[in-house]
Length: 302
Image 1 (tube, one colour):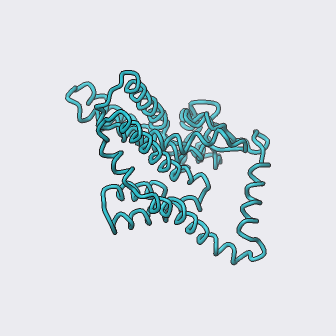
Image 2: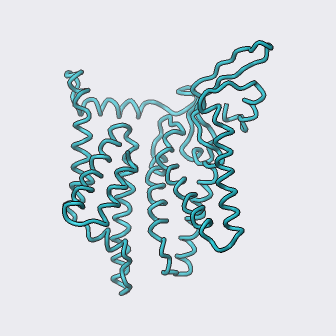
């Protein structure tokens, strides 16, 4: 839902008049719906805020140096302030409140603000250690998938009296997960290189900035949260990590260098292999005890 809101916002940049308003309104609706599911859905909206602020800063810098303004910067900065405030502030807030109405009707003695205050207090007092929940994990560990969440673990014996394991783990495809982290580092590296050598001919600069700003907006705010947190809070950010690896693979597949093309194809097959290999513990399919332990590469995964 958050990505759908961002997609509508980006579509609004390439349209005019009524269609632009329509896409901005849809973006606001989707952002409000995302936040109503989980508060960390705010990260998708924060990513758009950061993108707009960065565009205005770049335009100010380019005007000061009398450099021609890039097309994407021009499109972002041509959006009027009032439509942006309506689409990115008022509409999400209204949609968020409307979604709460059925709950408020079921519990009329609890007001909207009282419920949110109680929820906020609960989160603040929850604590953050293994006594609260055995699968608590700090925000910085999510990038390497150090502590996934186990939802189910059952064992039975088959007709040969061998141990059969049924396990459901809330974890991603490790190959894709770790490659996406490397891809994010590579994007950061290219931007640092651009800054050091003052390169201005990067036609895909804003694709990189879009991925990195949204990745950071959905991940870095968690460093301010001190309650028990879980790896699935990283899902909003890791989506942009997946976009990062897709970006690099697309570039390498289109490269004239056959070695880059070979690397891209190899990475695709490695990701597909990882998905198939760990699929049994995503779906709780039966595994013998040895097969299960082969998939638990680290003690922290148990």
